[in-house]
Length: 152
Image (tube, rainbow, N blue to C red):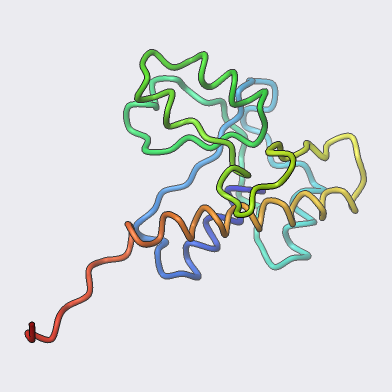
């Protein structure tokens, strides 16, 4: 859900061509599968299209090409940091909710898998708030410079 929401927010902000977003799990048990139908439905109800999503596993070799690696909970953050080989890559791993201001009491995005549609919607709300906060922090660096009018 976080990938789908962030891509849409970036598009809506006119930054879709300047940012690449891709999600991947730390395990391989769902590789190639679609997102959970409840997640796809929740996204759809809230105006997002998650139908094209396919699961894949994160490859530690990607660190070199990535500017930021966003984890949704501390468990994933710990795994990702353990896969790094240097402090630069380790610093790229950040929790999604750490971008919120003010920060939430919990920085983890809970996994709604064992819950109901209501909880999927609650998790989507958390993701939307955190994705908006992340985009707000990234946007100034991603916007093309404005052309001056020649006056100083």
